[in-house]
Length: 192
Image (tube, rainbow, N blue to C red; front, top):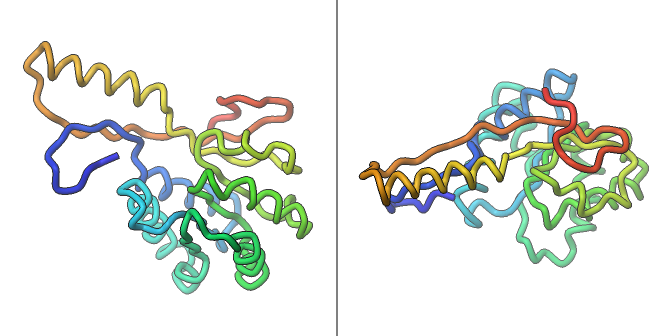
């Protein structure tokens, strides 16, 4: 994560670009009512970048619904299940991007209970689906932020800074969009 106002090196997934591209991927699948579930923007720079990516993409895809389809909540929201069920009923998204691993299991459980698990395409970050496989009647799309590549790139950057008089830099890596396949329980699935 970037630490704003500190000129430090960092390596991360391109949070803005990954969410922006995920919206357009879902749009190409026929979705215009793409919801976004996530933490409050103040949570971290990565969350703020994801929200900005969603907002910018939706300004082109479906500007009249962009604000209404975004649900940012506290991690500790005790009544998230009721809030999410109301959100689905009122806003009627056809696809949802969830940027919160804490909420992914509840999202899947509520969609299943509402009978919408097969009607709403769900896109999760990394392996959040593994937290709630018992609830899955569908195979979600995954924004694979490539954590191993992030670690490897960070180690290489630290080495260059420590031993090769490297210069500080900020590196943003591109995600892979995948879909969890049939019996597959690990990435990568099909790549898009």
